[in-house]
Image (cartoon, rainbow, N blue to C red):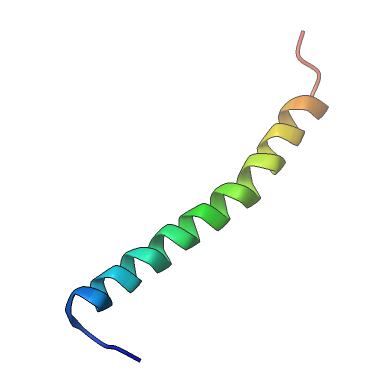
Amino acid sequence: MYDGGALGGYTRWAVVFLIIFVLFILLVPSYTTTCTTTPVY
């Protein structure tokens, strides 16, 4: 396990990007289902 340095910053950004990506994958289907299930006239 490497701690600190460029690799530490890289892993930190990788974790942040992974969390955002997972949240995006989880939120988009729920957002589309709520939009499609609610009737829009």
